[in-house]
Image 1 (cartoon, one colour):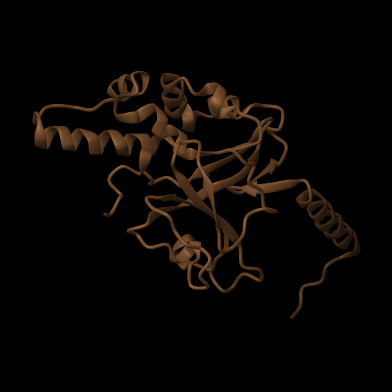
Image 2 (cartoon, one colour; image 1 turned 90 degrees about the vertical axis):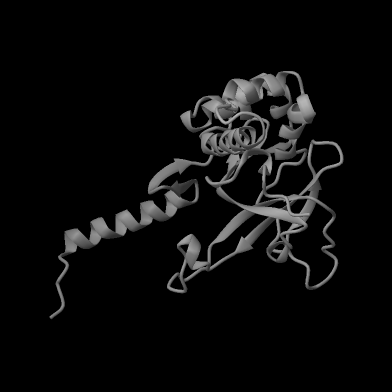
Length: 242
């Protein structure tokens, strides 16, 4: 037996659908919450990061490296890491110290700041591997990916905007239109994309390390922010395979 919908209910339903369609043109949904695509358009990339608690440790790292102005460079894209990624790095550095120097030694956030302020082992410069001097948008990213020089001298990254139905990411064939996600890959060596069999998705683990972008295309006053998915490690420490 089919449920009947009275006339007033039909009108309300129509208005709800109409308003939703119009709103979708100007908004996007993240975590079930509708967000204005221009929410941060009048803020610099640094100020956006500084306004969000999940990046408060990252902001401290940027400050210690003296890279605030660099992050705010016009027409740039910054791939932000969460506090958890920095914590992962500190944990790995601590384990290394305890196994090689002192079993009670700890590599803390203060240790990292000291390394950054004094650019020990190029630590300060390494932070620039997360920035590209190009505003990357849906219009200039492709499924196969493209290489871009990062702001770290001699370094390059591979960025792609891929269609996916990966069940590990929560996507299934039940969706009518396969979603697209951004991937950021730190390259340890050159990757030839000219071959038909060479795509971002097929990047060998000996050539680079791929990380899913959890939140993408955050428009700022000076460019764009993409947020790497939680679980990555600062500087991709410990992921390089020779």
